[in-house]
Length: 452
Image 1 (tube, rainbow, N blue to C red):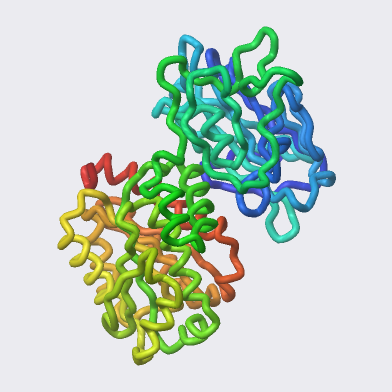
Image 2: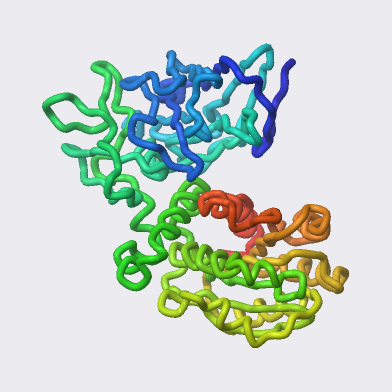
């Protein structure tokens, strides 16, 4: 069986030996191929989880030339995903991928042949995750990713929590923070610290331009780790997890005003009672301090109308949701008053950065027609709506329809079904879903002149 995947598409894989071959035309044929073994939180367990020419095998994953061979039956349960990466040396005459030499991937597994040709790389990408082999409900699948980085393999590896030692080269920017007990850097020569090891006759696989080292994600965050540690140490893990997802989606360095809109209809009571809503607010604040340096999230509760407008920040977030919602009455569900309140608030600030609105709800509204019309009108504004649905799938059909709504200037909405137990999802999983469609909207909105 042969299949071609579109970007974002996925397909099941049989459990057994799978080979992923990366192909490309010159000069990208000189690029390096590697694999990164990732845990459920989207980071490596240790630096040995980078499989490359100087460390060609780890836990059932082997590099052979330009092919990664993964024995899925031998991959440990702690490995949730295997990212297949191509990286080009910035010191080559053509120091980045182009539309003409964007690499492709072919997966062969148990008689199944799956191909993926990513959309052309046109933003000076020097490294890219082409496909990811991942676990889902006890089985293996492959997803077409096609996500590029302009920071080379060093920036990509750092985003996954690998410590890169660039001693002896031009100074590199600080990596994404890792836990104090993180394992040693990518292996180096026994007696002399060096960059990521190079083959005697091959260019360095983790290239750094001699005069202008590529930026790393950390300096691009809106608020520094040190400031978060001082003001809200309880949010540090969320800050780091959000930063990893932003880096993976290519959004690190983007600025945005983050809003949180919370459903306060009667059916939502259990999610307030069990702490799910407080936890969501903290997760959103952890994302916000990566995107907006004021450390404050405008917060709205809605039911039939807007029940309360408040804020959430590094000083007041502890127990904030319980204190604010306790005096409020439970109501029905209407989206448009809250959506209009967000638009009015955002426009009143005069912000030049776009707005990223996390709109949480557990069911269909009474004002479905008005919601569709407002979303269409708002598509000409620099506002992206990320709808997050709690509860059973059957109650979220209207939210899905908003994700594919017609007659919009640009697609200005995403949808994520968080399920019946949203708090059981990992922080990394939530952030990955929140960032799934935002990068595409940024590109489309810039092309359409919606944002600068």
